[in-house]
Every structure is written in C-alpha cells, then in structure tokens.
Image (cartoon, rainbow, N blue to C red):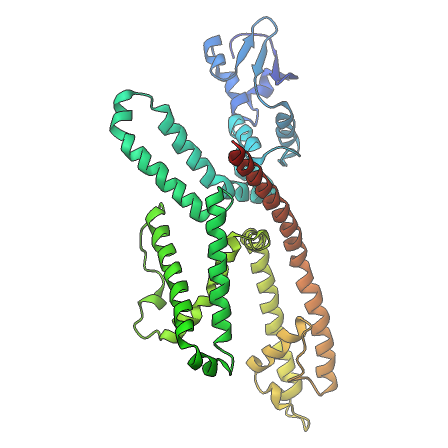
Length: 396
C-alpha cells in the first residue's frame, strides 16, 4: 500500500481494530489483505465502504458482532456461528470477508446445510418474483402478461395442494384429504378381518362405492398435482411400476403408504421426517454399530452354543445367520424367548451382548433426540408464523 501511515485502522460497524501494514499484507481474510495491494483511494473504496486518509482508517459497514467471531477464527482457527444470529446472515458475512463454509466447524457446517436446504425453495420463489416484478418495461409486461397470470395461478394452486397452512382453501382441502386417507385405511384394515368377506357379501355395493370414491379422489388429486407441479419429468426409476408381474393385491396393499400424506398435516410427523433427514449420519452410525456388534456376537454365540460340538449342542445356533436374530433382539432388549443360550459361556456372552447393546444404541440416540427437539421448536415456530399470516390475510 503506497499511501497512508504504517498503522491501519479497520472500523467494522463501529468497532475499531489496529494493524500494521505487514499484518495487513498476510491477513487471513481476503478482503482485508486486498487493501495492501491498493495503490490509490479509488481502489481502496472498491474494497471498503469509506476511507479516512488523515487517520488511515478503513470503514466497513458490516455486522460488528459477526466480525468479532471472524476475528476469533483468525486468532484460534475455529469459526462458529454467532448466537442468536441467522446462519444465512452470518454466512453472508463470511462470504464478504472471503471465507467459505468449509472454514466452519463441523457442527456449524451441518447447521448451515440444513438451513440452506430448508430455505432454498422459499428463496428461489422470492428471487423469481423479484426478478419478474423488477421488469417494469411496458413492452415486456404486455408480452409476458398472460404467462405471468398463468404462472401465478399455477403457483397458487400448487401452494393450495402442497402447503395446508397457506390459505383457508388449502386447510379445507387438507381436511378433506385426511378424511379420505383415514377412510381408505379403515377399509383396508377391515378387509383383512375374518368376518369381512361375510359382511362384504351382504353390503357389496356400499363397499364398492366407498372404494370407488376414495380411488377417484386420489386419482384426481394426483392429476391436479401433476398439472401444477414445477418438475413434470418422468424418470421411471421405480422398477415395481414397470413390471407386468405385479399383482393387483400388492398394489391394493400399497395403499397403506397413503398414511405418509398425513405428514403434511401434522406437526409431529413433519418433525419426525425432518429429524430423520438431518440425522442421517447418526442413523448410519447406529446401523454400523449394530452390524459390527451383530457380526462379532453372532460368531461367538454360534461357536459357544453349537460350534464346539459339545453334548449340550444348541440347534437354535446352528449357523451364524440364525445367531444374528438372537443378537439383534438381545441388543435391543426385546428378548422374544424363541431362542436363548443354554451353556454357561453362552449366557455370559448374552449378558455382555445386552449391556453392549444398551451402550451402543444410547450413543447416537442422544444426538437424534437433541435434533428432534430442535426440529420440533423450529417447525412449531414456522407453523405459528403461518397461522398469524393466515389470520391477518383472512381479516384483511
């Protein structure tokens, strides 16, 4: 830097920091280190917001508290989010100063990924609307007026079907959909009862009418969702739907998966789905723990109960795959009692297996529990905000 004094003052949101030119030259933050290569005030003002030549002070109109945490990263090498600050806002501060998401601690990286995945759809919709609204030229309005109207209508229909809290019509539609789902599930469960065939013969017309109405509703709903959806590409990744040998009975029993539709209308199911999506690493870790323990204990159990060819050989443990079933029900402390060790070493191994299962399963479940609580409060806050928005819209 060919101007100013030897001491450089950085004024970030009212908080001042003093550094020498040598420190500025090798500063870890890219935007700060760029000041050293500036040869004129014009170039300096391209990096910062204002510059005081007399005091050699560089002004940055940025979040001062966020910069404090960024300076802690410069000193200690650990970057974490500012408490009570939006992750996306802090991420914007990071980008401004020349940092990336990889500089964050692992826990904060996950928080940022989850927040970005949750808000990506909403940001993209707002960006599209802002881009469309910013085009104020009359010729473009005339040209694209009809397209915009159709797009707004499709978006309104999509929100009505996909977001039950978006409007009163969406809530009514969601309630009707829940009624049809419950009705269909009741009929499906009742059809497996022994007395169902007799009752069906007596009231066959009523049963057919109810099933036809439910199937008609779901078919119409699928068609409308396909029409208003943004992505209508058919990938054909489901091989079950392409096989001609799938029986009608299997397809009929597949109606049980309609219960997943209820997740759209109940906060508890939404919390469960969001928790599983955010905790997939812990779920994989839990699965790895169970598989490793099952491989070890099943091999030992087969050896102690059957493999040593003793007089008291236990035929229930004739193979390692058979012993795997005993290991999994022992680790989860279920213990059906259909198979159990009869030798003293096998019983000792069973006790170790039970205690190990309690410890191994408790480790990742703690993280899953905390994530569940966080997801519940987040969705509850979001639901309350939607309700307030809907109430104000209804009153207006």
